[in-house]
Image 1 (cartoon, rainbow, N blue to C red):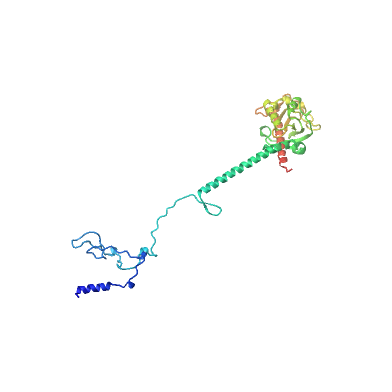
Image 2: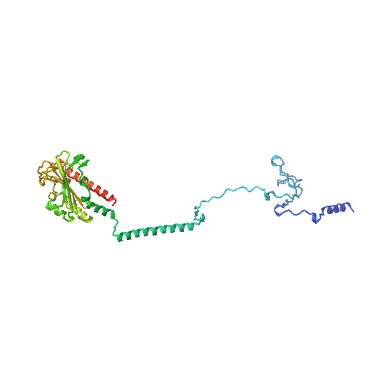
Length: 368
């Protein structure tokens, strides 16, 4: 056998491997990818730069310095796993997450996220239920008020009725206190103090008013009349203050008040109230001829007419009486105005009226 044939035969024998001794194929995930064929005339382990150089070289070798040293090449027949496909392979470089802002999720009673449509429907149903409930309550209240005849002014009507009964349920010292203070009630804002000197028995209105005033007050009727007479701190003036409890309702009182305002009845001298001249007191000589100033106030929140009339305590006759509104005007030069008798009548009437309103409030809040 020729040497070349022996060499070929030996090579064929060495390459023959029994079937049972052949290496098993590598798993799919761990199979080695064959390297690209090397360029002719170039060692496989020598990198190339891709640039032709001298005629004797096809490609120039890349520098092999420390900075350009190539990584060791794997053996072509190695069965080591691909590092990129192994379980210990490094994860890919993280990317910047994309963040979006959305509407917060709602949750139902089972702590499960509800869709937006369900939340909108739930809110709509809740709003509708509130509207229906509110309308039902309003309608029920209106129906109940209509059935019992309540117009929504129960408190005002109760106070009005309470005021009409104060004449027999409130002590006289509460309606006409023994001493009444009138801070800034005098001329120029001076303080006043009045002391009660007489209280008239409660009575009717037959002899309490002049005929014209009695006629003007007739539409509201006369249930009871209470009167008291006071003197000032200097004991130079006397003033009678009265509370006329009428039989009228709120409409009647408003009508009378409007008439007094429109026709200025409170300023007419022929409609002056009469004083209470108690015998044995400083006001014993306080008669019709001694009346100097007066005021009349028709209340609309109570069936009461409050009035006051003042004069001098020395029983002097007054030829030209003036209403309190006229006598209190700035720059008045009349004797009545200069003496402050208009302030006496107006100031005392106002304080008694305030006491009456306070009594109404206390009686209304008192438990029945």
